[in-house]
Length: 97
Picture: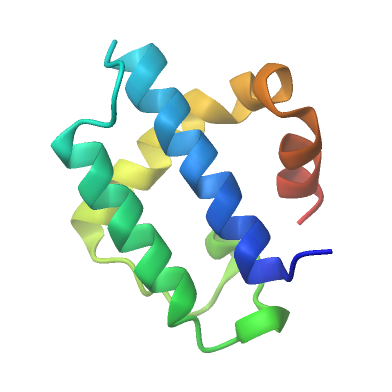
């Protein structure tokens, strides 16, 4: 079983790829989505809570810069409900926390 940080990295990657493909119509990750993915992965790597991290929206430490925070919210709003069709297990794990 993967650790929590690795699962979150996989989930955020799936969500960003789904958004880029479905909402933006790209076959490959565009530059802005690639930038967001790299940023999200680096933030997960540097999470001060490590394996005990809460869901980002419930966290008291907001480590995302405002621009990226708004972008990831947009991605999650779009991808969240669609994840159940693309990767049901990851979607359920994401919802459960």
